[in-house]
Image 1 (cartoon, rainbow, N blue to C red):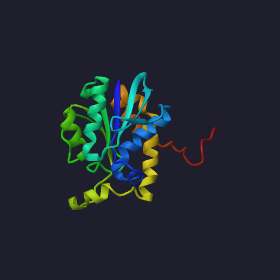
Image 2 (image 1 turned 90 degrees about the horizontal axis):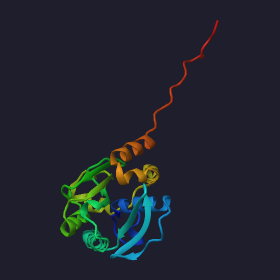
Image 3 (image 1 turned 45 degrees about the horizontal axis):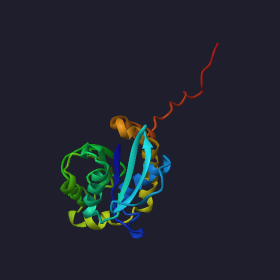
Image 4 (image 1 turned 60 degrees about the vertical axis):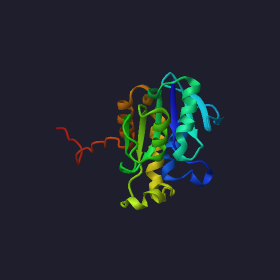
Length: 202
């Protein structure tokens, strides 16, 4: 079983924030793969479904970001899972907008949601990092991640969320193929143009 966690802040006013892109991705996956209805559980909302033949619990904590670990730990205890059975999807300001990276364990990178999860279950869980870019000034980071995606950003965001959802079956067992497939969907190889004038026979 996989516990798939999408990080974000609760409330409609936060729904389109850059900080909520993890929650957006989990919503996209759950919708594409016909998960059940999200219901209040574990200080958040949870829904169950299947990816790649494996049962998955999708969890969107509804504590504020810096308390996300409380919801994750509650679900982990209930299902008797280990940290390595957890995949947390979250925003990352150190990645260029729209870039994806997978990671197992490591530090929290200054992310309050990851810091809280580390405090409750340790750092040995999987992460899917979604790049949202950096504002260029560390003093502006908080305002930047708590602001909505711009209209221009939403064009690549929509394509990325769609590619993540389409390829989510691979995310369970083959993360390298998942990342490769998403990259292919977002940047398909260009078809070779035939030479001008076509071909001529004699």
